Length: 314
Image (cartoon, rainbow, N blue to C red; front, top):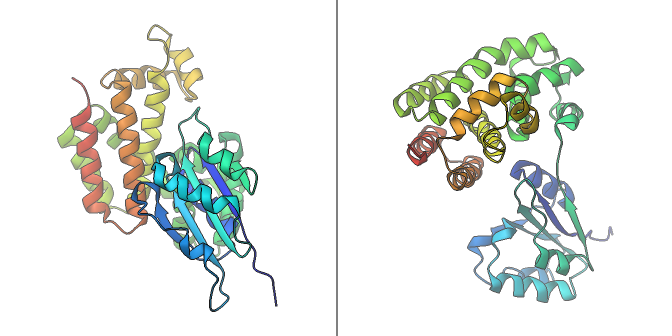
């Protein structure tokens, strides 16, 4: 009989998609009981501490651990003092760009498990895409990986959804740069950029029209949301830079490709306070989780656009 494999881990990073993928990979096919930190009711670790009647592997996945209430931290501390050998506990914490793992929780986990950052840098994205393509059974050429990043941005969730879309649209075909541009450039660089420009320019009617065109086309709600999230992250980076910095330096410091982006994004960022931008980031992260839980994009995305256009400061 194979001995049950136990895992204790705290995973932290900026991207919720990468965190979830890393968590599920650690669990190795074991379906966990999942709880969001803010919804902790008490007793969540009880099933892990109780021997299983049928010998099945058990696991608990706790997400959003930066928001763990004190009662949850106390309960997890009690469990982690002597974790069971045949159960798994994986916790994820989404942090800001310069953030780190929640210190109190990391201190509890380190003696009995692993505390690991989960991240994919821009330089690593092409290799990451190649690995994801293999997982999805998509034959992806190296130039196609670069084209996906150039066209759709750096959101892993958006890029992964695009890979799956390419696999459906071009089954058993080698995906090249030309294929990517044919599939995505028209909508990716025109309509999603247009939506972002209108939304962060406080053009509510134009944003809704642009969103309607995307939804009526072939774009999935997660891809659209990813475009908004990518633009928002750019605006947050630009907002944090000195106001008098020249546009070319702004573009380089914020990781943008072109000087005109530095100029344009600074103009858009001026319409928001940093607090408002960070609040919108949290709103979009919540929308991402809701979409992945089955919420309708037709309902959720207009609400996100309304939040963006109404939150901006005149």
